[in-house]
Length: 330
Ligand code: PBG
Image (cartoon, rainbow, N blue to C red):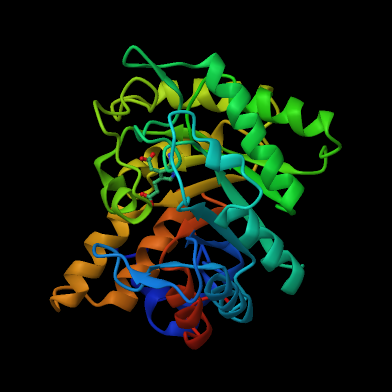
């Protein structure tokens, strides 16, 4: 049956009608807000390519967490800028480093907020790779032991969820075994199961000082051309004990989010990464895009593709706009 019996515009006539038949609703509860924790006191440093995002010391991180919590954002993701770096990333599992301090401080003040931590070595190694390096190669199995120590240090500090983003094979199993062995069987794992070797991480590497000092990450992160391999990584991580699987980046990979959603029964996360944030902020700053509309549209699109959780630097702004916007679900 076609026109004139069918007139799809009938259901688009008013905002009330559009709301009634809306298929996807973006909610503040879908959002996770990433934060960069650094050492010192009273530190709040701008990140050039990420306007509105800062590197902050622990007490400023706590203020930020309170703001996020008051806006209804349920979870934060912590990245660390360590006070020292070495070839094996020792600072990543040091209980006195900024991330571990921030976890304790946040959990002390706001126990209900979900603290997720990034488990990786690239911010903590002097060569900037996500694993330990020998003769120019990133070693897989030797890195697993170090990652397990990092996850344990986060759990010991009070993290609710650990999120390995290193892309070593077998790291979910290594983390699960280590956590279970130390009495942390209740701590969940969000695996960056499907993480592509992407140019869209550029601004993050400036923010976290984590650019590789030689080569690139193509021997461990995924080839952007592959989607069947995304399912292979997903199934493998679920078999190893991942509770949530993530696809990263989000916008250039909406087809991958959909494929992962249709082929699993677990919650699916998507990471709206730094480059996706920077592009939109730059266009908005030039007056080329309406920032609020563009942000809400892209987050909605990521949800429509199948993401249950959306990690985004826009989280605070989006939360404010969602509350102000009766057309979108609170
Ligand atoms: C660490 C890590 C990266 C991001 C999250 N965890 C950078 C990378 O893999 O180089 C990127 C996040 C972003 O771009 O917002 N491995």
